[in-house]
Image 1 (cartoon, helix red, strand yellow):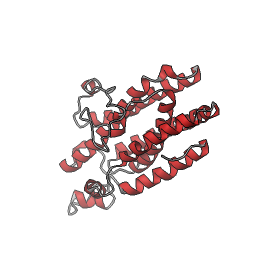
Image 2 (cartoon, helix red, strand yellow):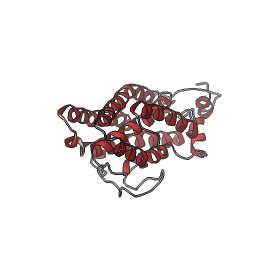
Image 3 (cartoon, one colour):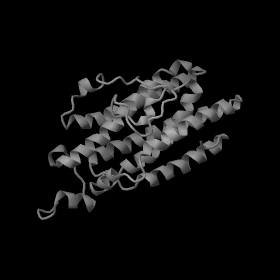
Image 4 (cartoon, helix red, strand yellow):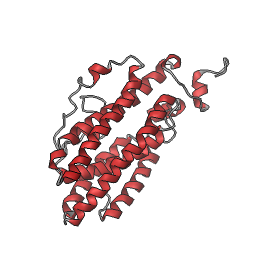
Length: 252
């Protein structure tokens, strides 16, 4: 970075940062928010899915669910280790929030947080049995794929590297969900699955945030985002609709 160039101009021009020592305060705040949201969402998601493991219809399904819980927790740890470099007490962090806490099934909080932590709003809703969990996992997995493709280019290079390592693991979780839904469809459970898709669709969609977010513009200036919320949501809608069509279900 040139001595004559401000760090904001450097980031806006595509520059990258590599360590906490050269991160300015406003950038640090946005970076920590991004990392915290990811970690809290992974831990809350893993905690919710853990309660469903023994509802799997067979050993193969239970092994897959347990692996998903393990890997989501490990993905959270990858980013939490980066947060530790900014002074976060990682030993306390994992036990500080009620990761299993959920709202009522019929609650409607849009994209707002519940107050427990920084998890995406969608992770405040309870899963209702195995089929519902698999349907949610497919829709949210498609959303995570879109978000991680975006985050793989963030200007804080250690985090970009972490997200690139995490992406194929999360993609495999989505593949497992699609396979699971196909098996459930073969059992004649299409009405039940469609009801779950209809329930989760708007809640997953809300995870992309407001279409006119001023914060998104600030993130773009910092090199922490490249694409607006509306465009990311459209990418998800296209991918999720195609996945549901392969299974024989319709978008919610």
